[in-house]
Image 1 (tube, chains in turn orange, red, purple):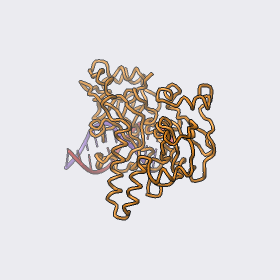
Image 2 (image 1 turned 90 degrees about the vertical axis):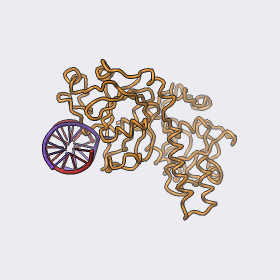
Image 3 (image 1 turned 135 degrees about the vertical axis):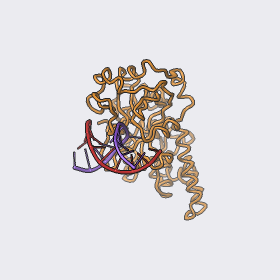
Image 4 (image 1 turned 60 degrees about the vertical axis):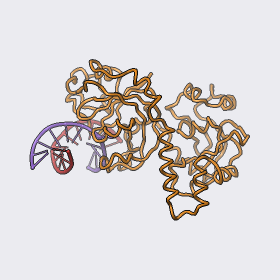
Length: 331
DNA sequence: CGTCGCGCTCG
DNA sequence: CGAGCGCGACG
């Protein structure tokens, strides 16, 4: 069952609709957790989103990918200057709602349907709630808004095919980092070459990882030609040449395990336990190609959401600790 | 059109 | 308390 969401984004709606995404900081500027920002990680592919700005719902969107870590979009300019530079990017395919729907006009019907906490608008006045960003709403609220207006439901269904995906955005972010590396006069050419090869898990980085890791932690596969040298702390988020080339910042994974790890669907804790993100259920894991070997090896069909894959070194643990911020923890 | 201050809601 | 992707007034 899809979920339904409502986003208040008066300040950035133009950019976010144009770019087919939503972006939020991970926390408030003082570090406090925010239910509305955490909802960015709860939103799943196929969910519906209502876009609220200038006091009306003007667009309807469909989530096309899980959220992932990305810098604050440059096109925001002055808007949200107090937000952190790093946040969640949620790909959403938007279509226009015509005519726009003013919640205030429907507030008598809408009010009782709204949640008592974390509501996107005041249930009696119908005014937008400044505290709110991405708010969870009931199917009834969604239906009430959308009734009477027109949006291209078929386009929303097709939307995923031609909208932003993790691969495309990640590619853009990595390209920008790669340009910085190439322009960095403090790095010599051999280091630059190693750093750029490391992006694809090749060269010196892979050799360094192979000194630490021997097989895929999830599937047990040892054949090097079947394994990818994957960064624990993602290449695009590393802060130095040292981090990008550090063998302790890598794991050897089969491609499907790498896919799940890279997106934060699975992670590892200090004790070497596998953590499965609560936003992914078992059928999702299977659909995403979770290796049959792993299912046999760990009895996944019967097993709890965590299982043990062996100890990590202290340095690996420090990288894993960063990666775990990628894994959504409920509450 | 942008800025400012008043709200309310949340931790 | 302070923080926040709203709102309307005022220029």
